[in-house]
Image 1 (cartoon, helix red, strand yellow):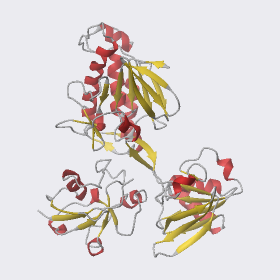
Image 2 (image 1 turned 120 degrees about the vertical axis):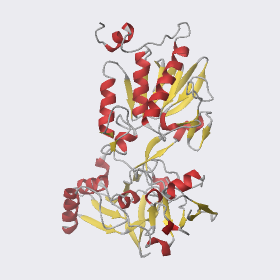
Image 3 (image 1 turned 90 degrees about the vertical axis):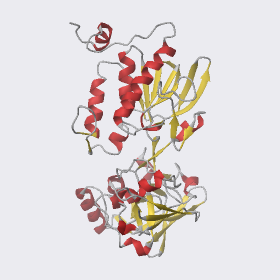
Image 4 (image 1 turned 45 degrees about the vertical axis):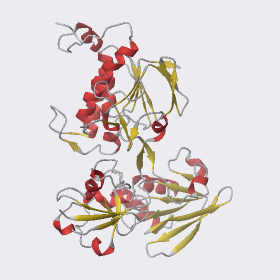
Length: 339
Length: 106
């Protein structure tokens, strides 16, 4: 059980700057994020897109912004729990008990939800029957590629993940590659390589087809794919892989007794606290009259929520507002020399 | 202001006047039309404002720019007449546009 002054859910720009604010005022914190890397939407959705409205930074990409925020956290020791999703939040006397999908447990008086639009999850196939085979014969990511050896694998998607795996698995498996149109958005060199393998019959390519149905008893046996012109093909297959990118889902946050309105959480504008004492929401996931979904608003919200955390984490101390330019104790925490 | 009609998957129809310059997605969000999520807020990064455009309208709309088709690969049940509504800017030419919403966005 990890004890911390505050637990931040979400390692996007708002979560990162909120951690900075907590550490500046002398609180410790840990961060959980379902992605395998730090940065949230900035790194997952638009790492290369320029952002023009970060104060004092005329232009930077999502990746640069993330790297700068990570650099700003360098003086501090902050534990990140990546590839983990918070599942359970339960009241425990004055504290909250928090549990992730990997079994990590926290006890904390303060939870700050900086969850953006929710956690990133793989986008799944639409036929309902697919659920039955999920993680047995149908996968959205690959953990152990050896299970495909000598088997028939049908891969859906038109991006780099689909192409890379089609090329890789074609060495030891019979590969069907299925895509809804005849253009691929993967890197040109990867597309060329795939086309070579199609020519040498290492990959069976089906374009303008989408998954229509799956069938099998215990394990998957065959799939039906449908062409744009409604023609249906039946393919025998042992495994199906889908690579349709990630979507954002509110996920377990919906079950924590919070006041949720259209995927956003209602908060006050003094502490950014939700209807539950000690649970705050900041950044894109929170809402209040006049809310702007801007990164700069997330920074402000995080700074105020951090001050509110102080009261619950240090009930016997009084929070004193200080500037980084002049405070000796803040400079000590940052590890910089005082004048 | 041009009138745009959104038809939910269950058949419920909403006809709304939307100011020029907004996107068809923003028109839906501002008027609380269920069925358009627009998670990324219009940066063409999520495919959750996916709509089907009535055939007679599809060819009248400005063509897809780079990236929209790629993003539609990720949409729920994309079809030939699929568009991302964040990329459809409302102008007088869109008066009477009808879009159908998919069963779900994710």
